[in-house]
Length: 440
Image (tube, rainbow, N blue to C red):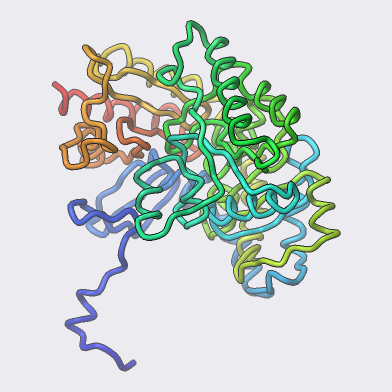
């Protein structure tokens, strides 16, 4: 093989995503179950499932075997053609999807799934705008970055070119509204969404795109009644409700989809990550039968080369079976224990202001116990040292990986579905020690 001299090749590395020159980036080379190993032989209990996606752990043989079998039969089929494995996965997704969701449009990543959903919504509704929450994350491509309410992502995407066709509303968080109870918070937050719709002009709004349980924005569930009222508002103004399930889908919150824990049927679901347990990239949009019929009758003039890749669809079929054969049940079984151990941190550390979440998706939020303000707000104090980041680093040094939130005032806890009390105890005890080490 010709090319650059060996000394230059030795220095060449892939550029990590979300890369900072100040960060220490491990090289992960092996994994089994909920554990990964770096190139120096150190092992880590992966309590972030890498990026909230390796739901079935790091060595599920059924998924690997399905991928190999498909690759040996036919490794690629154009996304413009039908394929038996692709159709099989679409049928399985329709079976587990809530309500009348029945047709599947495949994509590659969560960002592209969300962009595909809003393309379809704008076409079906003949309207330009999509509303999303402040503090949300829907992706880092131009279209998805415009949907994202996280200012660090959106500002990076829009540094040289603005995105259009989106509007924002406040999430149903207590600090956003002066409510006296969760029920009042739900009413006030939903009324606020209606106010935004009225001021944008209802006929101009194609859809509302929202996470049913906050993902990297902080694992927060909506207060009781919020989604029921949001569904009513969408119906009243003829607006589609799209549930972003890129993180919350496929058992992460204790049911097939996060929105199912709210007992509300959306018009579309976007998915990615856990559909294959992240063994190979796959994403897509599940739409209700009316939207599916519209697309079938009118066509869709856009596509992606690797959307619905047969090897990925084979992985998806196998992953769904693994989830159904006990992994989602394990999430439901151990959710109370995980919550109990996390609430012990809330009780024993004054700097832990809140613990919130659902299933195997939780956030430990930090704030000054005197002022209830963040120790450092990373969207405001860009260059300040962040003790919450120090907590995660301390935990990583002790062999447990946790996630960072948006904003980075929290530690996210999202293990693979196979963990039990032993792993939960190990992870929470390390997090407890890390908090004590950083904050004293």
